[in-house]
Amino acid sequence: MATASQPQPYRGVYPIAPTPFNEDESLDLEAQIRVLDCMIDQNVDGICILANYSEQFLLTDAERDRLLVTCLEHIAGRVPVIVTCSHFSTQISVARARQAEAAGADMIMMMPPYHGTALKASEAGNFTYFKRLADAIAIPIMVQDAPLSGVNLSVPFLADLARQIPQISYFKIEVPGTAGKLRDLIAAGGALIQGPFDGEESITLMADLHAGATGTMPSALLPELIRPVVMDYLAGNTVRAAEHFARILPLINFENRQCGLRATKAAMKEGGVIKCDAVRHPLEPLHPETRRQLLEQAAALDILALRWGK
Image (cartoon, rainbow, N blue to C red; front, top):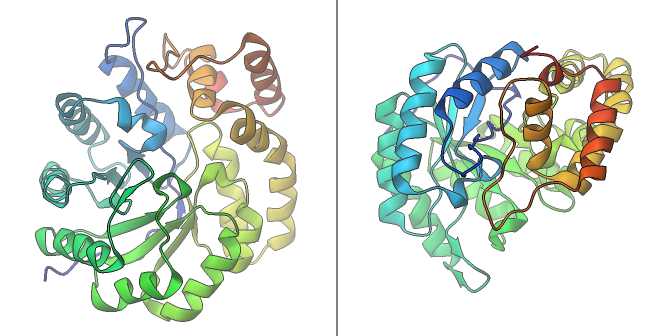
């Protein structure tokens, strides 16, 4: 088994990079580079690419390859990069993970194998899936536990992954009752759980920090305003963290419940980061009124995405 090494656990805010398209839904690589520069200016601790909020499920393999190289070459070590390599096929996932490592990724993120609502692996199959990934690469693996897969990853199973596979010490938990699951996972795995993260736009961040989370993986809409919540909390200033969170929660809630992955693109287009906020069909654009409300709330918080390119 390969052994991962790193100077210290990753923690903080690791937002998902959106994938910009032109009006004809072709990749806009020039805009992708601007997105990455904007995100670094948002004072992020790292960036995750090719994730669900990057519309990875709408990309061809050739497009994934182009985005992988474009993003890693442009970021050039300025911040750590996590690359999502999920696929139902173990063989394809392993190939993607090896490719990401060779390109310079610092970590990969994986959901358990699933296809639709019915094609899933057994628990033993899931374990073998992650074991083969770990045997193929030397960088850390973050396990993404999200309802999208429809796969139940129990706390004992996740803790067992951490015990038996050293590269698996990071977990992105974004299920109903995330705080409780994080708390139970940390209790079960102890020091082996180096990176308990939440996701889902950081909508339950305060509860998850109380439970022991040390990182969060939101969208790229307002990471510069989410980061102080995490850093203040980890530094012991929980009151100030709660005050920060209360101020930004309405926008996070609106993004999570009304907009999804379209929110970041809308803000970045408004702020001149990208020239087109198209999502790929069959996803649909935001309703004009929803977009107006989103940008109104974002402007009230003076988020960087709204002014970065102006």
